[in-house]
Length: 450
Ligand SMILES: Cc1ncc(COP(=O)(O)O)c(C=O)c1O
Image (cartoon, rainbow, N blue to C red):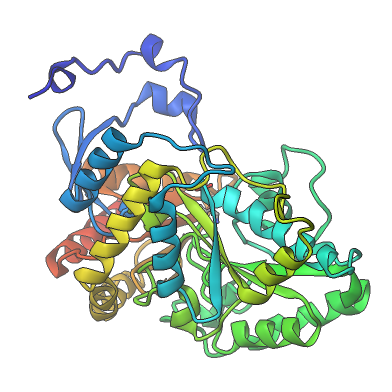
């Protein structure tokens, strides 16, 4: 045991006070702290020693499970060898190794990787690249950005501009000008479509709204459309069959870049290496983060097609000049790259993607077995992800999911609550019996919630 292990864990209000926690009800948390102190495999352990099944792989990022030796050792070795290298104008071997791996695991044609430190940074980077790409071609009017209702692209100004979750936007004033396509949560428009398994069969035509946006602004003013292949944070909203292809076709026909924000869907969650591969549609730009390091280190990135990279290089002026004035101190941080290289090696070696594809039908059956449970109005799923919608308590739409999640935690199961949803994204190697536990604890929590 190290001294860190033996240090008493303070949880009193005065001690907790200085940390303004992100996306957290600070007052509630500090009154009822949920302090996680250790993790192993598919489980967390809290400060009271309680073992907790990790029903969301951290925050959708630890699909390979916690404490993977290969990743831990790679990080330890890297931090002792090269703790930091300047991200600008100098390089280190780990980022080139990781770029090659990412290129290999993402769809053919997406060949150049720009590293960031997070999903939010990836969102803003992709939008800036889209604008710069058109400007470099002398098409400087192509600047408008199009997102989608219920979309989540992180919390920076670019991301919230195209994002479509009102609660994440309303407090922060003017954003970038952006249009929003309709969401694809089909049951909100037609109750008979609730509890659809996997992709809804109908709804591809929702993509046609893009034609109206183009008619309004003209394609000569539009740079990019950004969507998540399936929307995670809004509660797992799945694209109808044919929808993403339709977006692809309209973008191609109108010289608009299609950006897939794959911060949740890349590297295993869909039972394929990417959402693009799972849904069979290749974007021009693909954003990733989270699972790339198995959540062990902060790292994200943007993969672009060759034409984008080539255009930027060709317009770059003298070779000693930089081609794009953009990047972060922690872009391709050596320790994060070491984690990424090790995590992607494990992903491939242990055939984690195949494992997700194999267990997904069991997960789907188990989760849809909740149909009929108290408060539940819809269940959606894809790969190892599911979203449950709960009928709102009068005047308090977000309260029931919170209460359900807290009841689950009491029983040793961590699920995410957000808006009117509960979200599930268990680790890739979760056992069937653990899926059963997850679902039965949820069923009890739902039935005992007022
Ligand atoms: C699709 C998508 N984009 C961007 C982000 C933001 O990532 P981060 O929290 O690493 O900034 C998330 C986070 O959940 C996400 O799901």
